Length: 371
Ligand SMILES: *[C@@H]1O[C@H](CO)[C@@H](O)[C@H](O)[C@H]1NC(C)=O
Ligand SMILES: *[C@@H]1O[C@H](CO)[C@@H](O)[C@H](O)[C@H]1NC(C)=O
Ligand SMILES: *[C@@H]1O[C@H](CO)[C@@H](O)[C@H](O)[C@H]1NC(C)=O
Ligand SMILES: *[C@@H]1O[C@H](CO)[C@@H](O)[C@H](O)[C@H]1NC(C)=O
Ligand SMILES: *[C@@H]1O[C@H](CO)[C@@H](O)[C@H](O)[C@H]1NC(C)=O
Ligand SMILES: *[C@@H]1O[C@H](CO)[C@@H](O)[C@H](O)[C@H]1NC(C)=O
Ligand SMILES: *[C@@H]1O[C@H](CO)[C@@H](O)[C@H](O)[C@H]1NC(C)=O
Ligand SMILES: *[C@@H]1O[C@H](CO)[C@@H](O)[C@H](O)[C@H]1NC(C)=O
Ligand SMILES: *[C@@H]1O[C@H](CO)[C@@H](O)[C@H](O)[C@H]1NC(C)=O
Image (cartoon, rainbow, N blue to C red; front, side, top):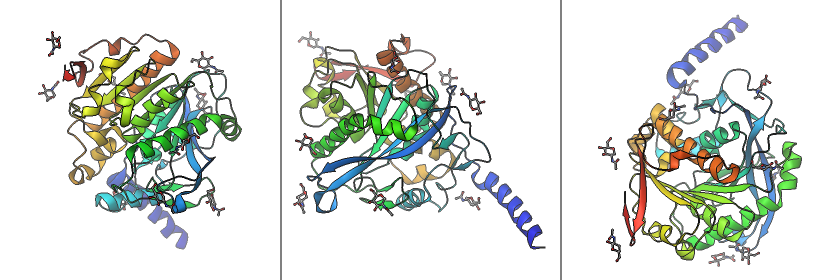
C-alpha cells in the first residue's frame, strides 16, 4: 500500500511537473556534449572593498566545457535551489518559478574532451548579480561548439555562490547598489581574470584535460562587460573581447584596444561611455544593438520571461521574444570569437541582413551614434 501510494505520488509529481513547470532551458545547439564544474581559485586580496575586513582569499570559477558524456535520465533543476529562491524573492514571483527550471543537457563534473584545439573564453557576470549560473544558456552553448568557457564569481559581491565543497555564501542583496567605486570593482574583476589565467594548471587538473593558453577571449555582461575590455587592455594574453551592455569606467572609453572588440547592447544604447570608444580604435570593432531587448535580456532571464511571470516584475526585460534573444546572443558572441580567435570569416558582422532583422549596426560620427 505504501509502495503504491509512493508510485501514485510519483506519477502525480511527473504530471504536475509537466503542467506547472515543464520548462527545460534551451539545450546547447553545438555538436558536443556539455559538462560544468566548479573550481575554487586561490587569490588573496587584502584591499577588497566588499568583503568582511576587506579580505578575500579565493573566488569561484565555473567551467563549461565539451565532454564525451551525454546527459541521461529525466531533466534536473539547473539552478542551485538557494540561488533560485533568493531571486524568486528578489523578483517577488511565485516560489518555485525559477527552482522548477530544468536542464536535460548539462551534466556536472564529467571529464573535458581532449583533442579539440578550441580557444578558452573567460566570462564575467553582472555586478551584484546575476551570477555566472544565470548565464548557463549562453555559456553551455559556447561549450557545445568546442570552447572551454570559464565564468568567475566574486564572493560577497555576488548575492549568492556555493563553493565546490558545498558551503553557501550570501553576498550583497540582489539589486543592491552599494557605494563602491565602479573602477575598483572592475579592477578586482580584472585582477581575478589574470589570476584565472595563472591558475589554468589547477583548472586543468580539476577538469582532467587541456586548456588553450595561446587563444583566449574575454566577455561579460554589464560590469562584467566593462571588465572584459579592461582585461583585454591590461593583459597581453587576452586576444579579443565582447562587452555586453556594460558602461565603460574611467579612461577605458578613450583607449585604443588595438585588438578586436564587440560591443553588444540593448535596443538603442544611450550610455555616453560608449560614444568615444569606437572612434579611437585602430583594431576591429563593432557596435550592434538588439532591437526590442533591454539590459537583462542578455541573461538567462530572457528565457525565464517566456515560462514564468518574471517580466511583470522587471523593468529591464524587453519585448523581444526570449527564445529569439537566446539565439541572437549565442550566435553573435560565438561568431565573434570564431572570427577573432579562430580566423573563421563571419559576414554576419558586415551589416544588416534579412536573417537578423533585430540587429542594428551602429556607427559613431563626431561623438554621435547613428545607424
Ligand atoms: C574596506 O574598504 C572600504 C572601501 O575601500 C573602506 O572604506 C573601509 O574602511 C575598509 N574596511 C576595513 C575594515 O578595512
Ligand atoms: C555524447 O555522448 C554520447 C553518450 O556518451 C556519445 O555517444 C556521443 O558520441 C557524444 N557526442 C560527442 C560529440 O562526443
Ligand atoms: C514547481 O513544480 C512543482 C511540482 O514539480 C509544482 O507543484 C509547482 O506548481 C511548480 N511551481 C511553479 C511556480 O511552477
Ligand atoms: C588554441 O586555439 C587555436 C584556435 O582554435 C588552435 O589553433 C590551437 O591549436 C589551440 N591550441 C591548443 C594547444 O589547443
Ligand atoms: C568550503 O570552502 C570555502 C571557501 O574556501 C570555505 O570558506 C569554507 O569554510 C569551506 N567549508 C567547509 C565546510 O570546509
Ligand atoms: C590589482 O592588482 C595590482 C597588482 O597586483 C594591485 O596593485 C592592485 O591593488 C589590485 N587592485 C585591486 C582592486 O585589487
Ligand atoms: C524595432 O522594431 C520595431 C517593431 O518591430 C520596428 O517598428 C522598428 O522599426 C525597429 N527599429 C529599428 C531601429 O530597427
Ligand atoms: C537562429 O536564427 C537564425 C537566423 O534568423 C536562424 O537561421 C536559425 O534557425 C535560428 N536558430 C535557432 C536555434 O532558433
Ligand atoms: C562630422 O564632422 C565632419 C567634419 O567636421 C563633418 O563634415 C560631418 O558632417 C560631421 N558628421 C556628422 C554626422 O555630424
